Length: 535
Image (cartoon, rainbow, N blue to C red):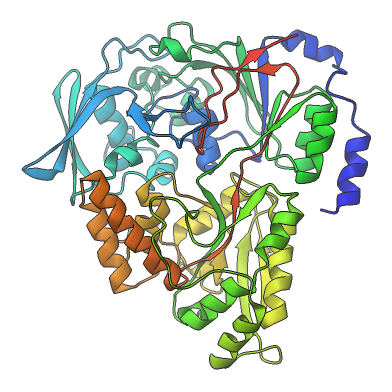
């Protein structure tokens, strides 16, 4: 995307205050343009990555353990959701007890109970259960890999057992959502029909669903959390993967909130009376590297050279300042940062020396193929960013070609793992990453033993020291002790240049003039319910 093309497109769009006539009929509707190419899966466990969880998981549905999203000043923390409390058995730390919130009902009026939780876990984990759904199981596999069994103790108490001590289970369960068993029976035990009439416990009730076009929902006045009853009447979710299209839709008054506006659009949005909001964000735009036989990234010198080749300040400039250079998975100052000895920076001369030691150079370059997508959840502005990285790598002796595909197709390739036949020739995948919890941020990517199918270690990274620290962190239940272990783990994976880290996002969003009350949390999740619409 070139600056002149973007500015030309935006100049042709009317100002935010120039409302088209159809907008008057949607005065009470919050219209959101997502970066996805389709509506996320509506059956309970959303597709489309964390953006799907943000717009379908915590709108139509709820998790047992939720995120506190009411502050822009501090990182989001866990809080009770459908579970009022949870505890681990001190005599057997594989066993957890969750006590559920009384009085919660699904949108169809049926009660939410421990049996509902058991039914939904079977939906994701028990292939013999009639409600087992392969689509939802694939999406939920990232979060439920350690769960082995569960049992209902009473109507409001359920026990969950993991195959190993798993101190981060509450974090994982913040990404697992609960569908109505009664609605599934009503629609003939058919998940495709359920998708058209979804029923969860969330603050919005689905009303109309048009695949690839629009999902409309209405406020749930009987929602159990009175503080999160939406302050607008309706919600409309629209997939718009193209950044220019999203921006033009905001400027013309067709939508009220857009994800990831192009950096060059910020001034135009503000000049038209809108808002561009950013905040600290637990996010890293990066490349997962392959460690399968034949991959040049098995050599730490090549991994370090790739990290030293990238001009991160240049990419921040490309993004108009809407990013921060990455010097590891987490940002400096984070409790997990530690003290890496390898300093990630732009040092092309040192990159060339390392490549020369490994037998490569400008005349004999390392040749790699990387999987990328043109848009998607958290991918920022991936095409110009990838082109910039490609040029930086070429300048030191690494030639890369891109295999470009839709975001959801890329996610399927990531779940398949680097050893899958379709991935064997690929040496990396550009899947931006989060570090909102210890598992997705550090433990899952570094852990090699008991590696989860479809989990976070795409490239089959194997390092005995990192693996031991990952296992120790998972089994450490004291928060301060766990933080120390995680800092040691981050130090190790940076020193080993496990991935190629580029920049941290600052999570820009464009808001129309009439949008009031939105609080941008320091989280990948965001709460839409406080938004009020004026005019």
